[in-house]
Length: 72
Image (cartoon, rainbow, N blue to C red; front, side, top):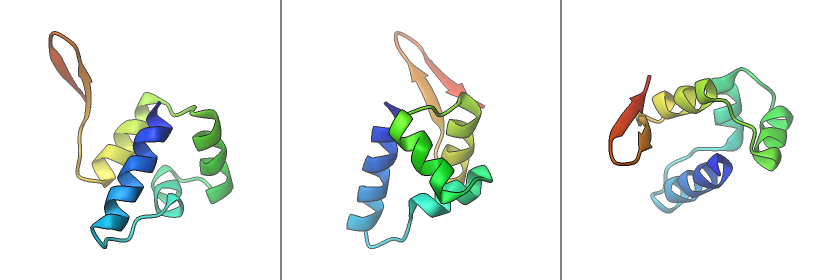
């Protein structure tokens, strides 16, 4: 699920003429591009990794239901 969100974000950045690659996000997580690619294929991101990516992008990770919670 989160891998699809990352794909959408990368596409949105591309459409906006901004540069953002999987390699950029791999660097944020302190891993190789191949390790990041494996996480994308398996969709095995941890909550901590999601928060790191969100912070890098100037976004917040949010749990939403009847109430909304920001993951810090």
